[in-house]
Amino acid sequence: MLMYQHRNNNQETNLASNDSMYRIEILVVGAGRGPLVQACLDAVCNVNEANRPKYEGGSRTPMVVCNVIALEKNPSAVVYLNSRKGADPLWKCVDVVECDMRYAQSALKGFEADLVVSELLGSFGDNELSPECLDGLQRCGLMKKNCVSIPQRYVSFLAPVSSMRLHAEAQAQAYSPSNASEGPAGKPCGALQAMETPYVVRTHAASQTHLELSCWDFSHPLTDRVSNVCTQEAASSVNNERHKELLFVNDTAHGAGSGSGYGMYDSSVTAIAASSRNDGTSASDKSNTGITIHGFLGTFHCVLYQSTSNNEASSIISTAPSSFSVGMFSWFPLFFPLREPLYLPNAASLKVNMWRKTDALGGPNGGGGGKVWYEWCAEVLSSGPTTETLNVSPVHNPSGRSSFVRL
Image (cartoon, rainbow, N blue to C red; front, side):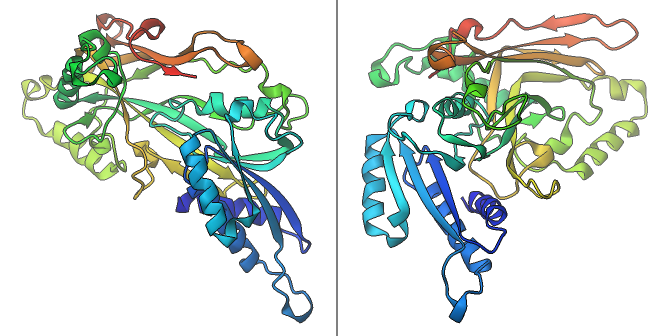
């Protein structure tokens, strides 16, 4: 939350860079119990205190006057937000609106936001439908042409992982009820569904075997290709399906610097691991260095705010080991299991295909269909002048048969 407040400080400092009063319309979507609303209000107070104009008599008249709309569709959270508004004088500029952000045009008729703040990121960046939600909001026509979104851009990353523990835990989910509402007596989901479902995991007994590679990215708000400004039409026919083919080449250190896949990448550990492989006394000492791949870890790298006046001034949060935000515990990796582990011989490469799919592109209001899901598969490739396929996995979760997220 302090990170989000810092980003708001940066954004509002840019808006209030002159000596005049500036009114800013802030739209907080998915307000929940109000932490993002509070962060916005605190950021405005900090900006006013740091940039207080020199009016006659040293007046403390604020530079920035904000109007905050807290948008939330959960009725229980709306009750809490209204109680907080009534109890906290700082919240007198906050209006609480109960509705789905994708269909907010009638509830917020005539409103246009300078700044949209959200916290819809998942462990893989887009797995909690942030693109569909924010694109739906933009289709409502509630953003000004120069509207800024926090976050602005997020990239999904994927890396192979070796972990018998994670694989066994995923297999054990086969005995869990397929419908949580049925309780322990419910019908088990079965092995197929268990091994085609991604899981949020705090990795411990695991080893990320290669450096993570980027899959795809999403940016907000969407801009018109000609005018390069935020428009309602820019989000009217957006396609949020994605596909990426990743090639993880042989890593002599077996990704040692990435540790378990959660935490900062350590180049010194990589150097030690790589040098130890060169200490063998014979070829046989080095030949048996294959690894077993049990699945993949999904992480993300997010630019919350990029200054328009200073390209080097950006605010970032990340769970990807190569750019990990130290001290942040809000997200853990997303584990994509393989139904059957793949053995990766020494010097072999791993080719992975990952898809993000939706079932009815061009649905109501130009959005997607009723659900979003991921599909994945892997292929082991030999080394040498001629590449051969040594092993393959089936495509996991085709057509979202085992796991998906409803829109």
